[in-house]
Image (cartoon, rainbow, N blue to C red; front, top):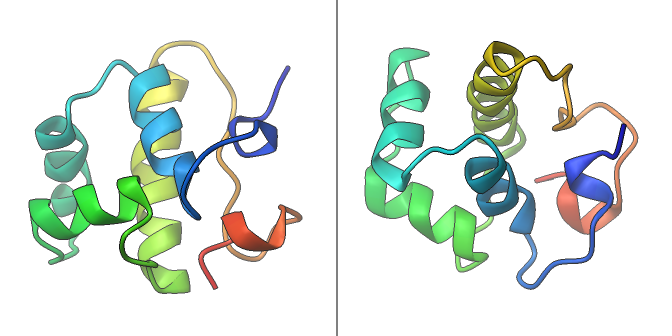
Length: 95
């Protein structure tokens, strides 16, 4: 299976937008899943992470990855977005 964070992208955190699109989520739906996991970044901040305008902290990266992975798991996929402590290209790790 291809890993979302192994694909070429624009912006330093293209994994967020690729994962969101692959999961079939709008920005608002991704934010709601992120918020349900207990985090407080705004929808605008999450869109900035997706567009590469802001760099999420390692912890935010992991919560976003969790939200994406939960949705992708619902779709029958298994953990395609890496967490900050896993092997990934340096500019995709969110640290």
